[in-house]
Image 1 (tube, rainbow, N blue to C red):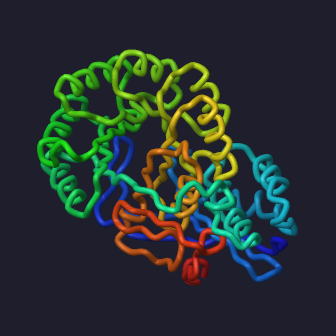
Image 2 (image 1 turned 180 degrees about the horizontal axis):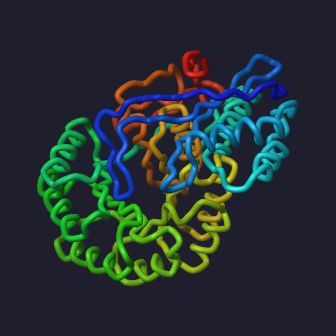
Length: 362
């Protein structure tokens, strides 16, 4: 099964409601789709999300990286030798993790098809069903309460609350949400780098004193501030999770060696795809640190790949794969089945897509 062509497409999917964090506001998914053609007629699919404020990648930079640098190096290679392909993919250019992720995902899709097995089984096969949280965008408290109540009514038992724009207002937001949803709903918070270290400690202690029962806080300080992360971890009782601070296995190793966080969030758009994500998972497992599998604003095309990784590994204990649940439409047939908070992996080789609209690539 040799690679004969790598093609690019544009994926546009409107969101049900605007997605708001401390870093940005987005109304629709505007991503790059990738398909890899082979001499056997098999096709692998991948997706890249341009998240300039986090990865530095844009639509144009992703397209240019794939077309001008990655594709010429991979044409003619045999899917059977996945390790050699990944070595080339990793070395062809630095950074550009989203572009690499899209191609990596499509390659793993083909790898599963080559061995006639769903990808999660090839990667470990720990389970075939996982449960995701859903994100509540940062807004005024009353709007966040409405969104939270709506999510609970749809069956979600874990809410990921976006905070980080205004520390004191964040406390009001969380108090209002907790009062509205009751004690049986799990709340986790994501500051998206929105606080300074001492500010983070102050607000988290206030949250603790208020008895809001927060599961963990994600990326409370700037991505580069490893010392700040450790400061927060050492001075609060909440578990602290690193997200934007960890792109590579080297990042994970440094942070875990310093005991700077309690948990790590793995996203394929940060790691450059499944191949590097598996290395981070192995490092986390060696340190006994649980992982969350997350996503950017992505459609089912790439979130299915993340779901396969999450389902395969027992150290991935927390799931934040709500991207498809935020979309107003699903343009794909096959892939993982998203039923509210439940994500089920199908027994179809690779990622399991049975139809991807040709219009995406035309």
